[in-house]
Length: 343
Ligand SMILES: O=C(O)CCC(=O)C(=O)O
Ligand SMILES: [Fe+2]
Image (tube, rainbow, N blue to C red):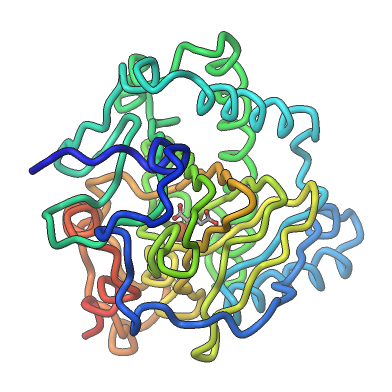
C-alpha cells in the first residue's frame, strides 16, 4: 500500500482538496441538528455530607447515564493547573517534528494499538478519518510500557502520570455511585471490570485544520468499547452525540471534563446506562485536540448483565478480550458491536 502522510502533514501542505481516501460518501455525512446542553453533574453535590443533597445528585447522575450516556462534570477536583499542564505538554508533543513523533510509530498488537500515527487503516477501501492519534497505557503496570510514553517534552510523563491517576480516582468514585444506582454494592462494578487490573488507555486525538471540513469526519460515528471514558477538551467544539436519531454538538464548559458510558457499562447495566453513538467533526479555521482516557475491563473479565434475574438479561456474556479483538479490527461503525451481543 502506498504510504499516505499523516493528517497533520496533509493539513499543512496547502493542497486545495483533501485526498480521496478521506472523502465520506454522502449518506455518511449526516447534518448536525443543533447544540445541546448535555447534563451537567457537580461532584461536590455527589459527595455532599448532606445525604439528601448527595442522593438528589446521584439520581441526576443516573438519569444522565440513562438518557444521554454523556455528561459534563464540574468541580471534579482535578486542579485547573494540572489540566493546563496536560494540554500544554500534549500540544508541545504534537508540535515536535514528525520524525521525533514517529520514533514510536503505531504498532498494532492484537488488541492494543499503541504509539503515534493513524488508526483504523485496514485496507485501501477504508475511508480514513481526519485525525492523528497518540496512544499509550496508563494502567495496569504490565501494559504500561514506558517506552511508549513520549519522553519529549520533558515533563510529559510527569504530567500525564499525575493526570491519569486523578482520572482513575474520579472514574472509581463515579462507578461506585452508579453501582449503587443499579442496586449493587458500591464496589461491584469496579470489581467486575477487574479492579486494579482494569485497562486504562490514553488517547490523544489531534484534528488538524481541514481545507474541506464538510467532506470528512474527524472521528466516524462509534460507541466506545470501554466501560467509561473521560475527555479533556480544549474548548473547541467538535464532539457530537446522537440522541433520538439526531446529532447534537456538545458545547464544552471551560474547566469541565466530558464523561461518557462505554459499551461495557451498557452491557453490565443490561441496557440502562447508554453507550451513545458519537462522532467528531473538524473545521477549516481551528485545529482541535481531545485527550481521552478509556477505562476498560481487564481482558480476562467475563461480563454480562449484573444483579438481575438472568431471564431478564437482554445481552449475552462475553470475555472482554474477545470484544476488544473485534472492536479494534474493524472500521468504526455506529453501535454494531454492542448490538451484536443482544440475545
Ligand atoms: O474528540 C472527540 O471529541 C471524540 C473522541 C472520541 O470519541 C474517542 O476518542 O473515542
Ligand atoms: Fe469515542
